[in-house]
Amino acid sequence: MSVATIKHNPNISAPSGAKRSRGQPKFIPSTEQKNFVSVMAGMRMSHAEIAGVIINPRTQKPIDDMTLRRAFATELAAAKAKIKSLVSTRFYEALLRGEQWAINFGLRHFLGYRNEDVTFSLGGGTNAEDEGISVTFVRPSKWGRDEADKMASAKILGAPVLDYSELPDSKGFSKP
Image (cartoon, rainbow, N blue to C red; front, side, top):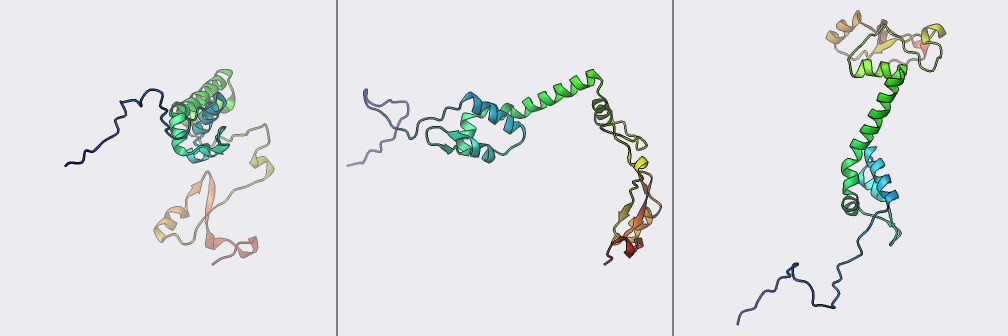
């Protein structure tokens, strides 16, 4: 006598009138939840962080990562592109209005213009030179001699580069 193995065939439905229970009801996201996931995913928030704030109204508990990926697949896939599109559109509009910050940003980051002699003043305030603020760059004294020799005559943005060991103790610096 042989024992027959019976496998479940998902294509065959249960007898008529019989209900098949398959766990919990499917989570259906609201429009508000879809918009929230789209924005947060575009801002590079992790799936775990997003899922932790999406509350399932049936259980009153946060959804898990698998539910997030299943219920919000479209929003997660398009989120980064939506944010890039919004930022790019607003940047382009600022360029068309002639806003100086947008022009400067475009020149530096899209067209590659670099000029270290240019002083940027945002917000209409005075610049550091008018206020008497000076910046001195200090390199660590632990650098090897080759690097130290290269930096001895170097200037960064027109300011001299000092060796850490050259700083006086009276300035509040402690030497090793």
